[in-house]
Image 1 (tube, rainbow, N blue to C red):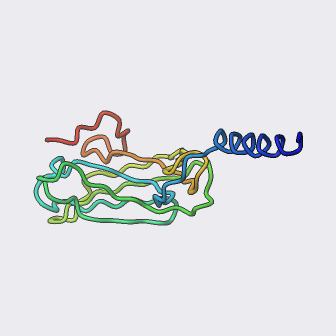
Image 2 (cartoon, one colour):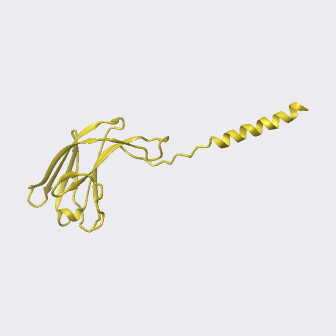
Image 3 (cartoon, helix red, strand yellow):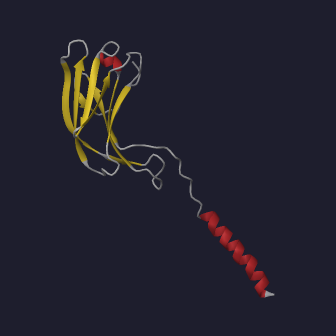
Length: 149
């Protein structure tokens, strides 16, 4: 008789333990390691008035400034997935589309920060840094950047 009672109790105790160990499922958001520049297109004049070039090490990306009606624009430079917590050189060059003159030129070093877009126990792990491309100050912190005109 005791064997019959112990079997159901053992099954219930295992079920109870598995309920306590439930984990939150991972979302499937994809993300890349990158250094980005963000800006307000209105800060750089008319539609596509300047060309923004952002370089990290020897990898560069560029685009025009965008429409002044847009609240903000961005330009990412993708990094290797395994870059880790490193510091990388960053260069910003902003040139006038009309004249070709350099409007802003700046450089700094970016300390990459670990990000977990799907939660700390879920992949991927990315390494990122973000700067504001400012028309007078060059590469600055995006903290406090107003996204409206």
